[in-house]
Image (cartoon, rainbow, N blue to C red; front, side, top):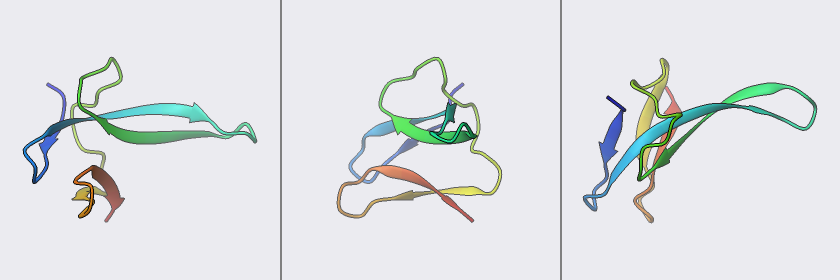
Length: 65
């Protein structure tokens, strides 16, 4: 079951994560929310992160604790 959050506007978002390669060749894990589940959906919130919501747009985002 994918980790999902419902924002203050009642829209559901699902947490995704994937490993990307930066310009210098370094690999970094990124996290993002999407309305539909994709193959890279995560089952749980990553350790050390908390979900917050953008007050103006209502979009959820992760923030380090």
